[in-house]
Image (tube, rainbow, N blue to C red; front, top):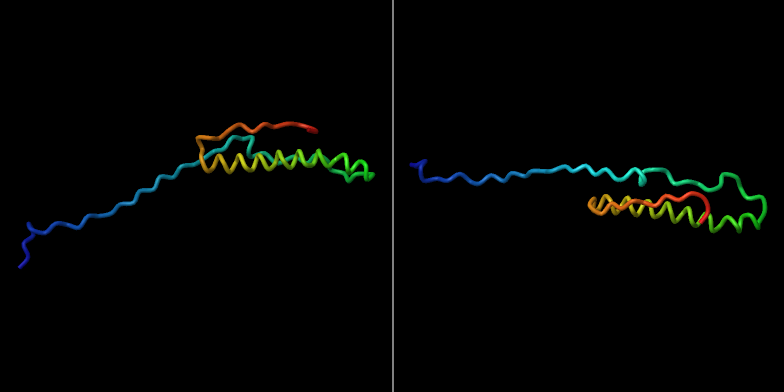
Length: 87
């Protein structure tokens, strides 16, 4: 014989998910710019372009790192400096 007043129901586990959409600053979502579109005409011109390419690669890498930082911790989204031209 089972007395219903003496039994306690087992506790129910409820899982609640909170979806948070993170919108990074628009500066992080623009495409990286390519400084040159034509191949260099001389070896000297190619050598002069190296620092420019390095500068643009650094800007692009910083943009990606800032985007990662923004997604990891949205409270620390910093503005990305956007520069034009040569270093």
